[in-house]
Length: 212
Image 1 (tube, rainbow, N blue to C red):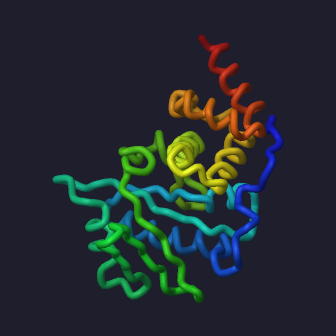
Image 2 (cartoon, rainbow, N blue to C red):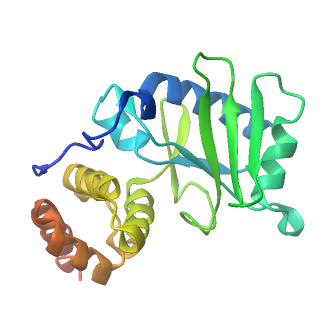
Image 3 (cartoon, helix red, strand yellow):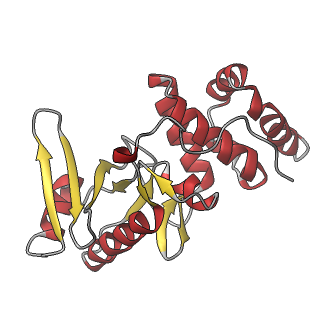
């Protein structure tokens, strides 16, 4: 059983210059994933591209790659830069002012830009079978971890896009969400401001209360 939602998983106010075809984003994610896997770097993709993919939307404007730190606490940014070095399909853009790293997949036209995020700062610190799932051969955060990460971001920014993504994922996949990974007080606040998730959130809490 799924519940209805008040808005689609991609904000309707996006302009054409801000969005990209979902298949192109998945192609770029798959290519980057191969490079990272070849270097033994654990990672998972995140962002509005996931609900867009699940909803079979044509476009999305947001894709991130969450990357674990390495041995001796090697920073994820350095691990990614080293992994793509010498690869003609990729370039790296690092802003020291904002401390943000983007990997550009140059094969498609236009090129696809993926922001790299350190695991633990966004999403779980450990990316393994408990926190990552595969869709179309690409590793993504699980439903639970996606909602947790988006909820954390929403509590800070109050973004309508984050709210839309949370509402879609919870309404559609509440029956596979691990409530232990969802901060209940934060979700209560979210549900008060986004009434479309109340039926799914209530059903999820009831499912877990019946197990006790």
